[in-house]
Image (tube, rainbow, N blue to C red; front, side, top):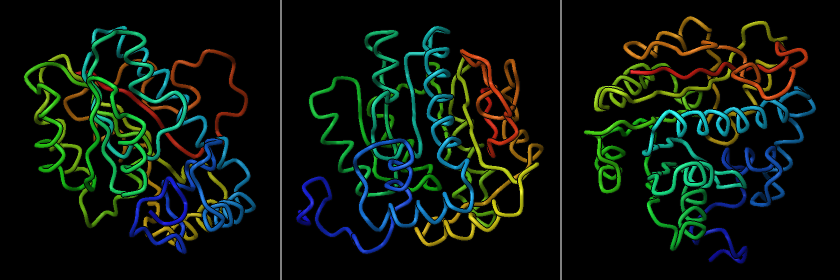
Length: 262
């Protein structure tokens, strides 16, 4: 270990981690001073960033409840980050016992802690893989997920970390292509649409984590749902996806969210 009991040995704790920064904004406990420092800089430039990240987690929770209610019993969560309260497996298995959930992340800290939390939790698995390595993801996930049956592919807040040269559209197509009829595709993604200039400046700061953010348009994100028509309410600002309470000023949330059905 590193002297910090939840950080696996070999992790460079002098450099901020995107997963730990995200955990900080979600109100988790698995972040370090270097992560909090970067989060503070980002939040000073874009005060809504924390609210946007929390809204993203709340969207994921609402969507998983919907998917479980629609009969989905298999979930592949790519870019899952460090587990915090209200994880996909907690919600899915509460809604439908026996649901299978595979978490995937590239950050060894996120994966190490996920494995510790999920030790002994049935029907769950954790894969250490880059979102771009769809071959590894699918091969490892197939140990728990039957791709001959419907599955929900969850890409919540991960594709904006994939640069254009790494073909995010191809990544999504590869994951879509192995799913059975009755499957679902979930995407949430940061955008510059309607956002002030400081959002772009904050985007540059994100590169300090080694995983810079690419802001994309509504049209580009919507195109990734090819073959998976969007269900109501479509691709919308994240708090507007089937909210449980009224939403004020949804335009301040610089991200879109949507779910498509095969």
